[in-house]
Image (tube, rainbow, N blue to C red; front, side, top):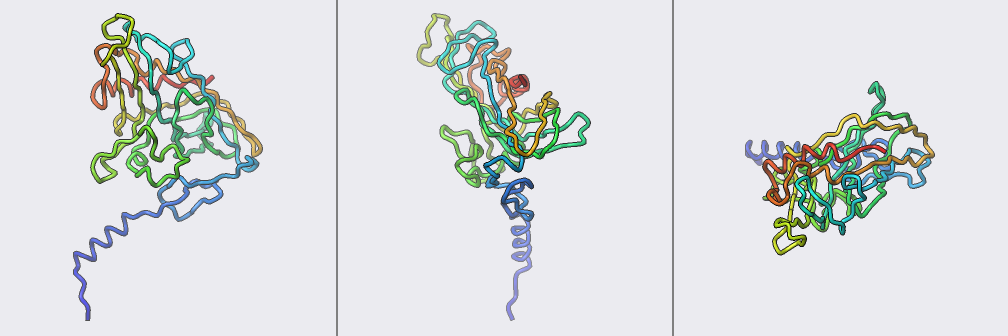
Length: 271
C-alpha cells in the first residue's frame, strides 16, 4: 500500500485551488467561456458590428489650448520650455451606466493612449442608452499583477516596446504596469536650448497610483448595427500641473508620482 504525506497533499490542494482557469470572461464575446475565472485577453467579437455596438474612442490631443505633438515646445507652469519625446497612458476598465445606475455594462478592456493615434477600438457593449462613464487611468489592482504574456500581441496589455511594465522579482504580485509614461526635455537653465542632461522622466505605476474618473457625462444611444463614437479631449498639460520640471524632473515613486496620478483625473474630458 502506498502512503502519501499529508503535507504534500495539502500543498497540492493549495496549488490547485490557486490555479484559476483562464479564458474569455466577456459574456458578449463570441468565445465567452462560462468556466473561465481570469480573463486572458482572447475575447473575439463579430467584426461586422451587427450584433453588439462597438465603442470607438476618438481623441483630440491638447496641451492647454494648443494641439499636442511630440515635436513641439511648450512651457510648464513655471515658465520652463519643455518638449516631450514619449507620452503614453493606460485608459480603461470602463463602466457604462445611465444616471439611475439601473443599466450598467462594464469590462476590463484597456487602451494605451498616445498622441500619435486619434482613434481606438475601445469596447463592445450591450444595446441601450448610456449617460455616464466611470473609467481608470491606470490598471485595476487585479489585472495589474497579471503576466502580460497571457495576452495576445494585439492586446494593449501584452508586452510593449518600449516597455510599459515593471517586472521586479519572480512573483507577479511584485510586478506593475506603467500606468503613465512621460519623457522629454526641459530647459533647466533658461538658455533656450535643451542641453545634455536636461531631461525629465516620469514612469508612474503601482496600485496606489491608480486614478478613478467617475461620472463622465456621455450620451450614447446604441443599437446592434452601430459603431459608436466617443469623442474625448486629452489634455497632456494636466499631468504636470503644479510641477516645476526644472527641479522635479524624475519620478518612479514618491510625492511627484502621487501628484501626477492625482492630476490625471483632469486629463480626460468628453467633447
